[in-house]
Image (cartoon, rainbow, N blue to C red; front, side, top):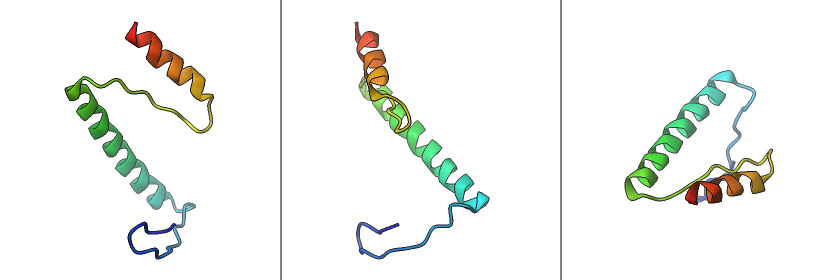
Length: 66
């Protein structure tokens, strides 16, 4: 991975279960905080995954708005 501020590269062992669990906990907390802020501000949002067709997620969001 590359640090955006320093430009320094670091090796992340993604085969390590503890690393994957820590990243998942960080991601989950960040995702929940973001969704809470959006709800509080009345902002629509949707999740778009890299392993699925993004059109489905966008269509779901637009249908919710109707």
